[in-house]
Image (cartoon, rainbow, N blue to C red; front, side, top):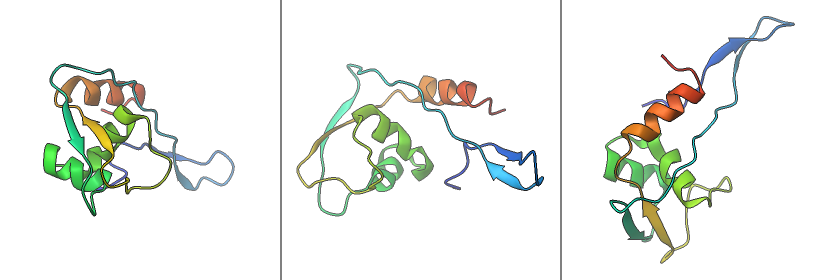
Length: 101
């Protein structure tokens, strides 16, 4: 999957070059169905998204749910994170925020 799957492409108004727009992400609230996971060696947001969702491009759900993404795709070993399980509504909200059809 493309890492820009959920990012719109627009034309620059001055030079007419194609540019990627900023992506908006929905707030993710805790749920009783969430999985508590302790980070292991070499885990990344992308590898966890692939393991739990079957799609590494959904890495942003895990990062957003934990409010700890600071540009680094790796986390600290032993760190406790939340893996949301009911992601259908989260993906719909994301598409709506970014007007993805």
